Image 1 (cartoon, rainbow, N blue to C red):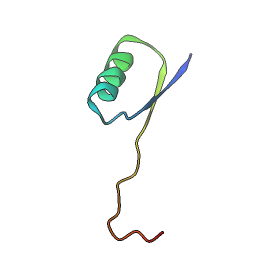
Image 2: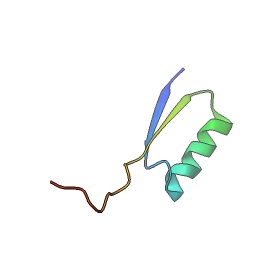
Image 3: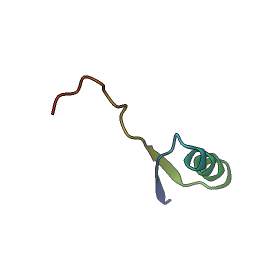
Image 4: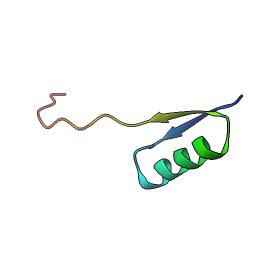
Length: 43
């Protein structure tokens, strides 16, 4: 079984791709998202 990694899985295209793959394949689907921005983050 293949593993498929989708970056941006919470976006429009990523979420549709994840739904399609989960419904139509037996592959493992892994979704990645970026963390939320923090306004008071110090560099």
